[in-house]
Image 1 (cartoon, rainbow, N blue to C red):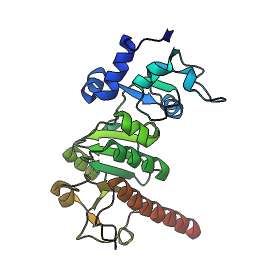
Image 2: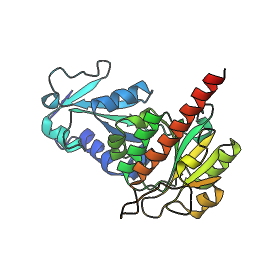
Image 3: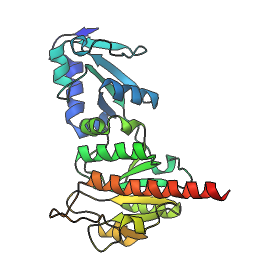
Length: 267
């Protein structure tokens, strides 16, 4: 099938899914743009409802989705659906498959990253990229202000939304779940805390980061087994939440690797 009309109902459906969180939630569908991201979704078992490509935008030698039933569209039609400034000509509509707390598979020792009321899709996507790179078991998205199926989350995550276990939940449920699994809660805060390298992050741990402006709620701070802050000497007294998460997560990675090496030396 080849679509040339901007008024085609299938194209309008994609635009609605792109722009409306309510529509995505109701239809249980999301938009995934970019060949790499679509391939990661497929490899994670995500069901694709439709795949679109614009041959005029596909570069020479670029791979394709051989097994997919692809609908071709004109460049103008594709750009109407697209949310990228430099699209590669591939876009899919996929089933949303949000995980649950009880379905998460944890490593030994568990390594979890938690966000509370993070608002900006770009930050949430960047946090997912960090989680993928660092080998975090799961990301808990608590009381979300942006949905995981937001196209800008997919874009900022570079497809790691599909490679990292996630669960959307409330803060009380997350705290109860972490406590029930004997996972230490390490809360991030701007002051009144110790440096991350002064806290044991090598065992079962959940690193919790808060909203861009308000930080973590008192609920999380009161439930924390430890509080950490990133030492800063500049005149600007705050870091982007995704950067702060990355710094502390990689301190945990450093400690965990040191622990593994130490165990190896002792055997």
